[in-house]
Length: 438
Image 1 (spheres, rainbow, N blue to C red):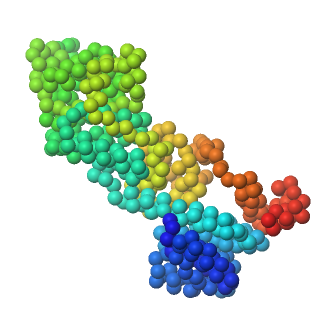
Image 2 (cartoon, one colour; image 1 turned 135 degrees about the vertical axis):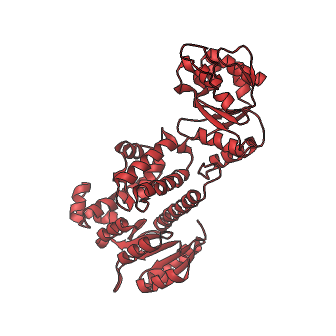
């Protein structure tokens, strides 16, 4: 987010001058304030993206500014600067809502990296809020490049009559895609009939799909229209299409070719005008190669294909969806929607999401019921998510950067006590003092 507006708050004029010059050279607009009162006036007059504040200042502290910004200006990111002696206060500031803290003295690279991290969090939060507040007509949230491609494919599929095959992992929202195509098409006023092919017993599925006449089998006391006749003039959504038996595959192929169905026990076919939308989480082409799925049916179904991306490949969409679900379930539990802390957001984004959007929705619903605080923290997330996130990915930083961060965290945990921190780190005080100086 180059070109952001940053407010620097510090009672030291030389610090203000250095930060204004360095951040300005990076393309940011930099405002300065010598105390919290001046900072509050600036926040009222100018739209600010990021506040970088010192902890210790006369009269009102930087910690009070952190609390004010977090409680009143949710669209502003805030970061704390502090000396090593007061690093415990910086940790408290992070708990109060500061995005990060910088221990003085810091290098230009450390400053730029911390500012970039804070602005990236702000960008992701703004994008997620915009996406969650303005869902598309399809009901599919998400503005990631992969989802934009899905939205374009839905718009194209809605304008034609061709059969559509929706592919993707379980829980990605394949039925939502099918509904979006139907209700954006000229068939929108006619029925949309969803059918889970894997949930109907083999002995019943033919009758369920095509209907039966009276007396067709034991228990058939009256005629019954099947799903295809119910969907006449509209669309039928055949989910888990790969679960159909070979015999049903042949009969479905006949429906696609002849536009007519034969009810169980009937002698004559009945014409139907139905658009078929099918979905699977399996590789149909691979099943064709194994002889488990008819090749001619595959070609009939695979006229238009829409592949839904897994949630782990959708970037900021995870936060957008979590925000949307938090708002949705907060109404059910009767309290204001919770927001996710930055560390919790990092865990959500790093998690693999084997259950995709369905898993995320279930998680947020559980959190809405169980977590009564305003902010959802990492500790509130399921253990398997925390451990998964901790073990995923590579930390692409230099060894010196990792060491510096670890020393700061240990020093913070020790409340700024260098002797205790040196013991925890396995260093003598002199070595720790040299590392702090570096």
